[in-house]
Length: 272
Ligand SMILES: [Fe+2]
Ligand SMILES: [Fe+2]
Image 1: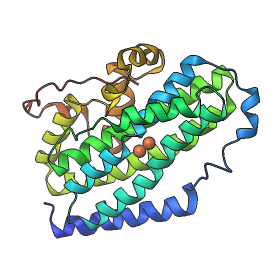
Image 2: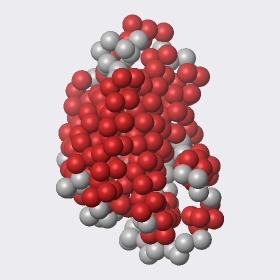
Image 3: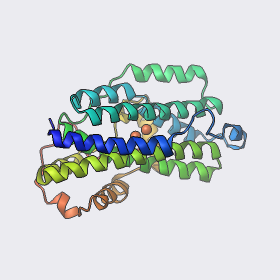
Image 4: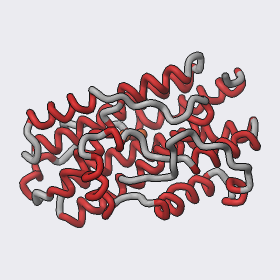
């Protein structure tokens, strides 16, 4: 459990996050996406499979929320963040689903089958400690942003203005989430620098994107996404180093701390 001073600081951070979101970042799935331009977009099976994959990862939302809220019990600011975050994340799977349906690349029935398969599986949080989960989310949201940025570039190069715009809206939300968790991380560093750095090193060393290995046809999806995904070197240069820079940390700060034993089955691997 965090201290009251920390919980008050989390609440202040949440209020600035929420104010900015309400004033500058809200977008509407029905009116803001240029659906009328779908005719211009080529039908590209690779783009469609990636969109379906990320839609699936976003569909584990009930598990993400359940796990987050159970870890954050008693923390007002973080719990309200989780509720607002859930609303934003809910739109991410919906807008990707709408893209697949409205572009005719998946039928309503295929999308329902996919949802049924996903809802039958369960994602579990990779860390049971609230601070480690906060740090995991800082890394995960930034990784997600990088993945969507790459997908947006791919959609634009392929000549799909609708999917590119969908990824722009999602990516902007993911960056806002990443920044919020960076602020949480900075507050933890102020309170307990050595302990937070040790946790961060552990989280980075064991990082995996959530739920991808729970998706149907995981091996095939991974093979297709590898061409526009995040491998270990992209993860280091486009996620870990920018995160450290944003926090005023160096790689020595992170990697000079002793290695914590990794949980069974965990490895530093990202695909997407
Ligand atoms: Fe998302
Ligand atoms: Fe997010």
